[in-house]
Image (cartoon, rainbow over all chains, first blue to last red; front, side, top):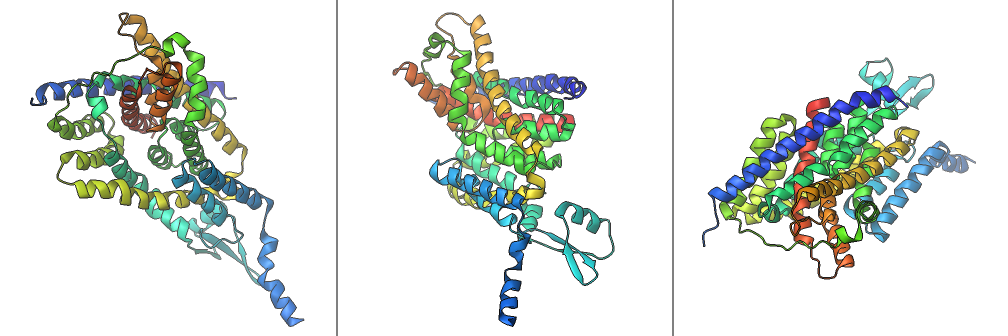
Amino acid sequence: MNVQAFLDTLPYMGLGMLGIFVVTGVIILAMYALNAIFKEKK
Amino acid sequence: MDVLNQMLDVFSNVGNITWQQIVMWVIGAVLIYLAIKKDMEPTLLLPMGFGAILVNLPWSGVVDRYYQKVAGGEILLDPVKGKELFEAGAEGVSYEPGVIDELFGMGIANELFPLLLFVGIGAMIDFGPLLSNPKLMIFGAAAQFGIFMTLSLAALFGFDLKDAASIAIIGAADGPTSIFVANFLQSKYVGAIMVAAYSYMALVPVIQPPVIRLLTTKKERMIRMPYKPAAVSKTTKILFPIVITVITGIVAPRSVALIGFLMFGNLIRECGVLDSLSETAQKVLANLVTLFLGITIATKMQAEQFLSLETLMIIGLGLVAFIFDTAGGVLFAKVINLFAKPGNKLNPMIGAAGISAFPMSARVVHKMGLKEDPQNFLLMHSIGVNVSGQIASVIAGGMILNLIG
């Protein structure tokens, strides 16, 4: 068991999850923008 | 007597069989059994199972062989040691290429096969349910938690950072992403990682329900979510793959190949003028690549490399990744529900569909919903979350490569 290695990877966990949520947030905004700009014609 | 000696000579290779190779034949047979009898990811597990037998025959001609000249002839070297000696230019060491290792070099070492497969997968996916309710995408992100949890746990158990990251990517629940990342990070555990990734994907209907039940109450599982799809224009569907590629590519440049090929396949599907190519990508291309992918991966299932404590640990850590992915999605939905108005609450089970593993995970959630309440149809929501998991898992792969690669 390498507890120090575990602790060393925690910043990757934080950064990685933060990065995914940020990119996902941007993609969600992009999807709303696409839907708003290119509405389905009735 | 001469005839007898000649016959003994013909069968002399029997003496080269090791118990480790026999264990690998059994593992290969189990994979073939699971593929045929249990219908577990047969397109991958069957070729991998057969490949595991092929590469573990003594003096197998399908893998690279390294020989050392000695007095009176040549001896076969251990593949890893032989490769090191050959590359170091050791005297008297020769090399004979094997077709599966050649395929590995041409299709996996350069990440070609997983990327080509992604074109087919992209062409298969309809992002419509996600586009009609974009906020579902957030669950795809939450359900990648298992990747990073497993990264830390693998490091705790003594794997170096790159191997830990390669093992963690099993949690992407997406074969091509796992192969791409593990190979990019040059992990020596690619074989075990692939076996774990594809096995657990097939076992999603077994793994996810107990985790979901553990984290939710019956009342939560019965929450109804009416499906009111917003109309999505054709232009939006065409621009979506382009926009996603640009956004993801700018933030995580190393994921450009993965997301780019996935979205290229989707663009072919949605453009409306390449139906023939779309159909080819979905069927012929995906089938052809899959055909060779499994058997090629098997080169990493040679007994000397595969039979180790590390392999068992990787199989265990892969399960942990899937469990924490599921938990991440479900718990995130529960957190959102804390702030949601009554009547707007989400059924937290849909969060579990964010683990990619398309479309098994969406089906699991839908079935669980129906079991609790036969009038509760969660399929379209869970499909939306599930396809977002496909994108999020690629982003997670890109993040891993950016942070650790």
